[in-house]
Length: 240
Image (cartoon, rainbow, N blue to C red; front, top):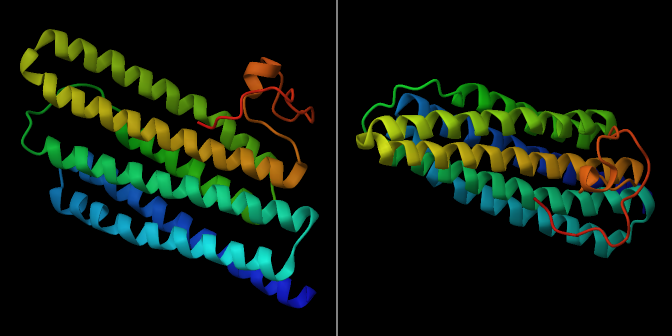
C-alpha cells in the first residue's frame, strides 16, 4: 500500500508541475503578444487555454482517486488538498493569460501609447513567483513560499504605477483613452496572476508547516511571515 501511495503521489507531483509549466508558458506568450503586438501569438494563447482546462480536470481526477484508494493522512493529506487548491488557482492564471492575449488582440488596431510601461518587468516578476511557488511545492520549502508572498508587493507597485501613468496619458490625449483602458486591463490581469501565485505559496506554507498565512497582515500587521501563529478562528475565509 505504501509503495503504491508513493507512486501515485509522484504522479500527482508530475502532473501539477506540468500544469504549472503550461500556465507559465501562456503568461510568457501573452505578454509577448501584448508588448510586441503579435496577434498570431495572442491567438495561440487563447487556443491553448483549453489544454490547461483539460489538465486541471486530469489533476483533480488523480487527486480524488488517490484520496479514495489510499485514504492518506497527515502530511500526505495536506499535500493532496493543497494540490487540488493550487490546481484551481493555476487554471485561473491560465484564464487570465487568455484575457491578456485578448487585450493584445484588441490593441493591434489602437494607436501607440508613448508611456513608460513595465509589462516585461511585471511579467518576469509574475513568472518568477509562479516558478518559485511550484518549486516550493515540490521541495516542501516553506521559506521559498514565504519569499514568493513577499514579492507580491513589487507587482502591486508596478500595477499602481501603470494606473498613474496611463491616467495622465488619457488626460493629455483623449484619442488614447481606449488604448490606455486596454493597457489598464492588461496590467490588472497580471496583478491578479500575482495574487493567485501568492495563494499557491500560502497553500504550500500550510502544507509544510500547518500555518495559515491568508489575511496575515489583517491579523498580524507587519509581523514577519516566518511566524507560526494561526489567524483568529473568525478571520474571513475568502481568497484573493
